[in-house]
Image (cartoon, rainbow, N blue to C red; front, side, top):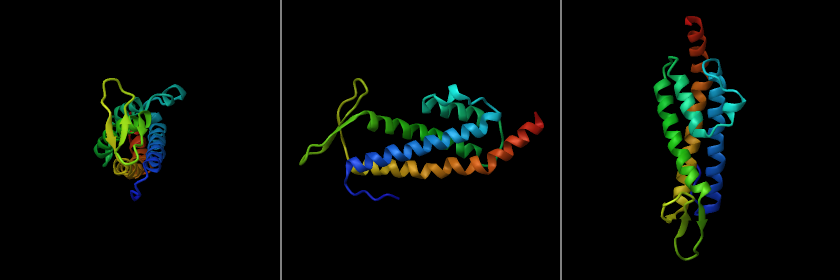
Length: 152
């Protein structure tokens, strides 16, 4: 767990890094599931929400113990990426003795205060999901795909 040191820029950096690591794990998941649903070069260029939807569709075709948990975790990851996008694509303005402000890149979204604790919380959530995506990809899913191919 990364401790909040009050540094917004550092916290934002951790959000960017750890969310990229989750995206890599989702790509690895989809490469593993490639035997069930295509994940070629074109699909690898998709935005993350589309990749998550594609992974969930593939996962519903196989059976393994933690499948429903993995699907739920992918849904939560989509929410994390939405929060990440708001922060990464928005503009944070430091106001010295006043609260820092996030100006959204999204239309009709009002400015709001942003804190280092929000950034570190999101970075730590990203970190927690790394193993939640990784673990079934390494152990359970390859066995489930083998069973699926033997039945099909």
